[in-house]
Length: 183
Length: 272
Image (cartoon, rainbow over all chains, first blue to last red):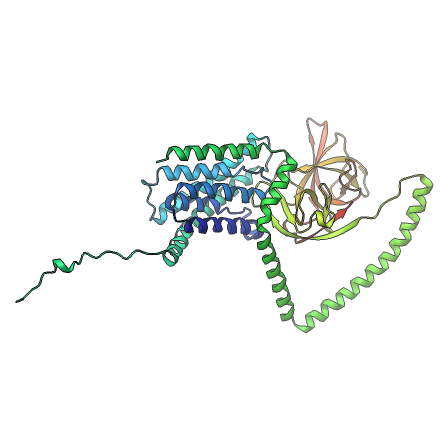
């Protein structure tokens, strides 16, 4: 297995969680923080393997929860579930289409907070929920939808720049060359 | 598409998560601080960049503006010195009176400044991280404030960082009393999440006031000191309005926070 793409996605998840905790721009302007982890999970599930999905779910979820008042592990299972659902049907999904990437990202961005809240409420926690939660949920879904194509573009470009690209075989074969004229 | 080995891995991941979710508060807090310790280099880098940027901006500020700021600071300093001298007199007088009445001696707050390094990335909690920890003498449940008023309390303390749960978070309840002139002076209640708009930053509820409460808009609310977590007299905010609760058996007042929680950059921790 080539570990480099997995490392890139994990590094991106690490930086994304750090930025979500330290940059308050979206919180101030939109009243909600955008979560990038669902978008990264969509990329991992459509492009990389099972191991990467599990690692992104565990590492991303634990990093996120460690900086939050969430109980440790509350974000892991929703992320894992999203990744596995996409992974199971990735043969049917149009990976290359930007619109499909956006829809998948938005769906993942909408499902992830719902899953985490489901776990929190079942654990007897009382998160801050009100009418504004609906707006925050929409912002998170839309944010993840917009970030997902950017993730695809970024990682595909990184892959092209850093990975070994096999030389494409041409159909030209010297032994089959048709020599014209008088030989 | 999933193989048998995948199902085994999934089983162990789910088991790990269930075990983590069952961890009690203190070990979970320590584990969270250990994991979030991975972010320390990035926080350090961010802090250095912030300082460097601040210094660069200071270098760009015009001399006239700097001179104006220095004059303003000098004026403020002199005013504060005069107030301090006046307060010292009052303090001595207060101590004498306390001895005469037989009240316990008041202890001065020992404060330590801290820088806010991160905020809760989840939208449904109100918490932040500061750059002080047990190395600086901090322990859990210490009060955190700004010059404007109470901010929250320390939820978990690591070696070099601590997590602060803010006012307005469901995990923080503060015993408070109404202060200042008015009919309901010294009436006590509990500071809790704003029930009508829980996510509105800067608004909280003063709950469990008596049914015939005489609190009025404009009265200030301070910590009552009951419960032993927060020292008495830390400003919390100002009453905006009130409404009866539970068919008039109790009253709930909306309180506008004195401290601006959304713009916190530096806070003070009251040391034991």
